[in-house]
Length: 355
Image (cartoon, rainbow, N blue to C red; front, side, top):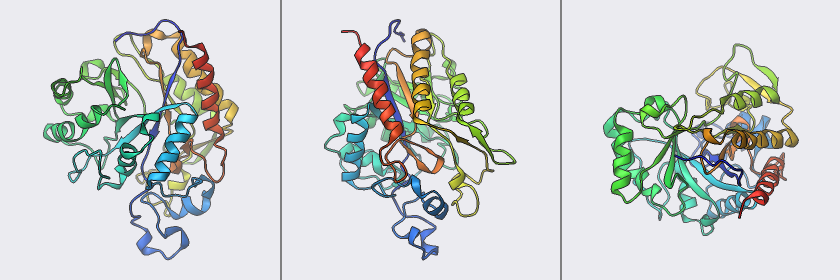
C-alpha cells in the first residue's frame, strides 16, 4: 500500500450510529411525553435533561426525507462518506438495496441505499463486533461475509482504499481465525481486487488487517468518580493514538466530544452497557475543534508513510448524540457550528489539491 509524499485534499468520513429508529423497549412502561413514538436509544434522561441534543428534525430519523436531508447536509459541508455501524445477529436479513432491513439498527443504512441523492456521499461499514452482538465462530463470520458484506462492497458508492472497498472492524481481537483470509478470497471471487480491512483496538498486519483505525479514543471512560475534564485532555489522547507504519498505515480518528452522562444512571436505559460514570469534557469550542481536525491533517502531511494515500480522517461521529459526539444540527445548536468547521477545512484543503 503506497503513501502519498506531497499534500493533497483530505477525505473526511463520519461514523453513523443508527439508534434513532425502531421501538423503544422502555416506552411501554411509561406514559410520559418523552416515550411517545420514542426510538430505540432514547431515554428519559436524554430527552429531558439533555434535550438540547435532539436533532432539529426530532429524535426519529427513519424517514426517507430525513436521510436525504442528512446526505445533503453532509455533502454540503465536506463529509465524503458515512461509516455506518453494522451489527450481527442471527436474524439479520440478507443485503438488499430495495428494502429496509428488519433490524432497526440498520434502518438508516437501508434508507441510504434507496436515497435519490446517495451519490453525494459514499459509504462503508463499521462492524460493531462487541458484546452482546459479537460474531461467534468461523461459520458465523463466513455467513456475515457471504450473505451481508460482499454485496455492500460491490455497491458503486462503496469507499475504497488502495482500490479495494474499505471495511472497519471494531474489536480486531475477536475475529475468528481464518475469517479475514476467507474474506479476501470471497472478495476476489466476487470480482473485486480484494478488501481493505481496517482493525480497531490494536490490530496488527499479521492478523489479516491491511490498516488500522479507531472508533473513538476515550480517556476516563469508566472511573469511580465522575469528573469534568478540559477538551485538551481528549484531544491529546486522540493525537497520541495516531501512529502507523509503511506496511500498516493508520487512519487518524477525531473524537469530536464525549459526555455519556445521559446514558449513566437508572434513567439511562443502560445504553452504556451498565458502565460506571466516567469523565466528560468541557470547553469544546468550534475553534478548538477546527485546530484539532487541522492537526490530524498536519500529522498526515508530516508522516505520509504512516497513513494511506487517500488521506482520510474519521470523525466520531455524525450522530452519537447520547454520548456527546455529533455533528448534525440540534435544537441546542441549530447552526451545526462544528459541521461548519469541517466545511472550512475541506474547502481550504481542496484549494491545495494539485492539478
